[in-house]
Image (cartoon, rainbow over all chains, first blue to last red; front, side):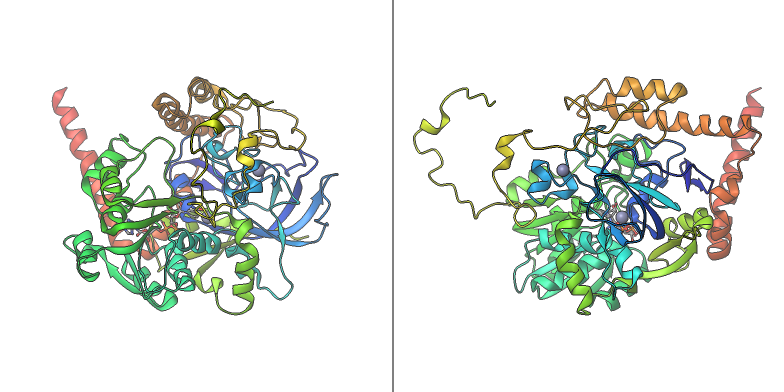
Length: 380
Length: 160
Ligand SMILES: NC(=O)c1ccc[n+]([C@@H]2O[C@H](COP(=O)([O-])OP(=O)(O)OC[C@H]3O[C@@H](n4cnc5c(N)ncnc54)[C@H](O)[C@@H]3O)[C@@H](O)[C@H]2O)c1
Ligand SMILES: [Zn+2]
Ligand SMILES: [Zn+2]
């Protein structure tokens, strides 16, 4: 795929990616997803998104070629590739922070390298393509277990680890009430994974009815539409005995709706980097001493959030890009044991050639879309 | 080589109450103490630089690998080069980059046209999906845009 400007993408023939570093591999992509994160690019919200870029950070495929220093991967291996590019050797990687590698993005220090995610995330071409260059091939790429469905595998590159880490960062205790903002793929997966930590209630908030309905069934949670509430914060206070939730999780990020001041300052006038409505709600509806976990993506400049309330309520904020590689062993186990059903999120399968339609469908939330898989046509 | 400004370990009570179990980032971070070794870790060989890469001024040198897609070019490239003179802390880093992205969009169209290719805006925007799955909402949107456009046209005409 080829980005042409906000809301405009198409497919074109591009040169075959090359090995540029001895630890690189070239992967022939067999499945790749469109993510809520891609929408921030598609909407022109991420600085330094250059025309001619290829998006895509969720992909699985077959190893086509390896650089001279690659030892673990072999040509022909079926692999899933974590969305973060990580060297495995820097002090951040060594401590399990694979989403914060110091050796994968020269263009910004506040963001690790990510496939197909603008020059702010390293200027890499992404996986919504037939072939893609994968740096540090011995670190990120993981051979897909033979009994695993590739549809499950492709969701292990981002959605499942991100949802799981969202819940993990919540520090959920047995009996807790957990509130999740956003019923996109990430929010739904966070709601599902929250249960692994033993809460007594999981509540999800969105304004798109079909997504709430889906979430309720998929993640066994309560689901409410904030458009039906006069004030979401009061609603959440009330439903938690006027106490506040134990844990609030932001799975929306910088394009949240629902607050006109945030929308005006963030979307209309660009005085802040998008809207922080969901985060504001999370901070204001969590209990005193509670935990707010953020996986919704925000841009590098700044956002308007009630930091005074964070102080006065004694909140803990935990946030990160998911550390996919750290979580994979446990999550593969959950999938293999049948405790998690990632592919249940997939609602659409589209040939890569129809990428423009697929982006529009997901962006405008048409045809009850939750998750779209793009299938490139390149044959071995 | 580590600089030590003063012997902080001699401060009365230093480290007495430290509790390694209380790592607020755990289990997201598996704290090893390596942070205090800063940048002395074994890094991969540097990837050869074959295109222009704009580097953040908050780091001393390139990361071992990087993406080499779409190097800066044209007017948008000039704006991006300016942006990278400023740190990630500054609005004058990020706003010019957003502005460059918009300029780049027009450069993209000009580039298409110069190669004799007329970009299909309707297809690139995926409007087919709106017409198929959201015909009513989409019609209202188009009608609104058209009405506003016509009103602006009338006002401009009157002024003349
Ligand atoms: N941290 C990470 O590693 C990571 C990884 C993947 C995605 N993400 C981010 O997670 C977010 C969600 O991703 P997704 O794929 O589910 O995207 P999505 O766009 O499908 O979902 C976002 C949902 O939030 C809803 N929403 C909008 N405003 C809201 C509000 N004020 N309160 C509650 N809900 C609101 C939308 O209706 C939508 O259903 C994005 O910001 C994405 O960039 C982060
Ligand atoms: Zn993603
Ligand atoms: Zn690293």
